[in-house]
Length: 433
Image 1 (spheres, rainbow, N blue to C red):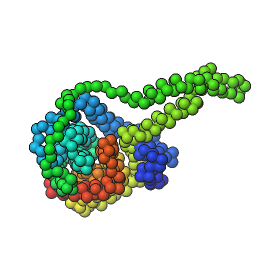
Image 2 (cartoon, rainbow, N blue to C red; image 1 turned 180 degrees about the horizontal axis):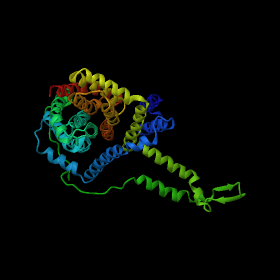
Image 3 (cartoon, rainbow, N blue to C red; image 1 turned 135 degrees about the vertical axis):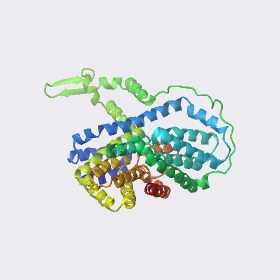
Image 4 (cartoon, one colour; image 1 turned 90 degrees about the horizontal axis):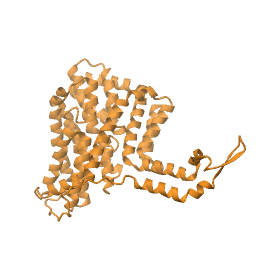
């Protein structure tokens, strides 16, 4: 039953009938699983803390980005940087990747993506770069934001969940993974540079910047003016329509006007239009869809766990552990990469950590290495698909806002070439270290 719910949800996400958002698709799959008994309300209540932490972390960085953007800080920084850097395209490319990596270590992958990307977009626009070059910079920053978030338990929500369930404290996690994180950064820069080299200009001219680019002015925008405009239009244009609507009460045989029965005004066409407008706004608002998607996929994965997935994974990890540390790390990385790419990395790491707790592995070093392999697979391997991680969905949102669209098929082709080398080199780093 849970597998049917998963297939149904993924079909809706990929097909998107009538432009249905991915969040509504995942939420529909979650409600279907709840209706069919694959998951219970108690299961949903049990994961409220993880859902809240992920959501509030994302919202916090989105709010910070919004405030900085409206204050003009990103454009000011772009103007400041443009006058103090060497006019070398490759130097600028590597510089942004290193800046994104540092931000990921200390500000999480969300913070790196949401704070470094707008600076890059403003700077590259001011310098007059071509759209394909801007696309390369943004995509590279998006990948590096995740790849470089392996160092600390606080660098990524995946690290936090894995360390918490495996009983690994902050210092121990950092002592093991900070070296792997360095390997991932170096390998990632090499792979991204090799892949995008042909669209990065060797040299560029510093174009004339617009006036006032170095001034940061804080201004509160008019949020959702279209809602107020529609409300005002309804108030002005539909006053006569309200007074002309009549309702018949069959129990009492009395006819009421809409003015006499205010609670019935919600049944008029104007109100239905407002509801339709709100639903369409939520469906088109990518942030809401990303949050709903994460919630829905959590619930669906819980249904799979209740259906026996956790027990099956526990037995598989027991087999991997019996093969030794090296093979266990490689095969764990492959297995969890597939899971995270199909579902989402956060519910994937949660279910696999639960499975590892009951896996028949007695060697502590082996189980710890498998945990690290799971983290790497969920952080790096999840980039193979657009919905493998919330940061990838945010990257799509940023690209669409700037008119730099890419289809899911083209993204998977690109991500496969870029991600797999970094994934396997990082897994080898765990084995060697």
